[in-house]
Image (cartoon, rainbow, N blue to C red):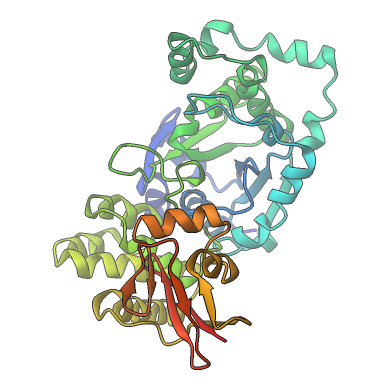
Length: 394
C-alpha cells in the first residue's frame, strides 16, 4: 500500500486533539514521513457492551492513520478485561467472567465501523497470548518493572492513604497491557491521556527488546468537575445511542466543553471551529450536536434529530413519531404504567421518577405515586424526563 506523507495531514494527526507524544512529536513525525508502513494499535477492554464517544476520539485518530496508509490494529482486551484496569479508580473494579467479557465485546467491531474502515483493520484479542503465559514466563516479565514504578500511580497512593485495598492483580495490570505491544510487535500505540502510564510501560518493554514504540495520547472529554465522561460516570454519549438521543445529550453538555468537543469529537476544520465558537453559543452547540450525529449516522439523521429537538425543547411540543403501547386496562396506577411501558425498569425506579417530578401525563406533572391514570382508545401521552415519550392506548 502506498503511504501518504502529506505534511498537512501528518501535522493534523500529530497535533489535533493530542495531549502528548512520546518520545516526541518530531520523532513520530519522522517515522510517518519515512514512507514505511507503521503498525499502530489501540486497545479496548470490554467492560460494557457499548463503546462511547471517548472511544470515538481515538477511533478518529486511527481513521487518520488509515487515510495515511498505515496498518491499524484494534485490540480487544478479552483477557485484561477480566482483571479490570485500575486507572483513575479509587476502588477495585468488579472482576468480570470470560462469558461476560465476550458478551460485552460482541458488537464492538460493528460500532467501531461507524468510524473505521473495518476491512482494513486487524482485529485481535489479547487472550491469544496472555492466556498462554506460564508461571515462568510471567516471572520473567515481572523483572521488567519495579514496585517503585508501579507505586507512582496516583490512584494507588490515594487508596493506601485512605486504607483502601490494592490487590495484586490490579498492580500487575500495566505489565499485561505492556506485553500486548511486545506480542504484536507494534510501532505505536494510541489511547486517551488517562492511559499514559500503561502505554509507557509497554514502551519500556519494547525498548528492552531494542525497538522504539511511539505513544500518542489524546485529550479527554471531561465534565466541569474534571471527571472523565465515560461509562462509569453515566454521562456519556454511546455509539449505539439513537440520533435523537445523541443530539439531545450533546445539547445538555456545558458550554465550557464546546472547544475541546469540536476539536476531538468532530472533523470540522480547526479554522472553521474558531469562527463557530465566536458566534452565538446556542447555534454553536447545535452545530456541534449536528456534526457528531452526522459522523456516526448521516446528515439526514442529524437534520431529523435537530428538528425533533427544536420541536420538543424549544417549541415544547411532542415529537411527531412516538412509540405506541396498548394495555388492557382503562385505569392504571402511575407506577405500574411506567413499568408496563418500560419507561422504568422497576416500581422502585418509577417511584423515584415520580417523586423527582420527572413524569408527565399529557401536560400535567405527576407527583403522587398513587395517581390513577385513565387510558382512552385515543391514547394519552406519557413523558419521562425531557426526551422519552410513549403514547398509551387501551
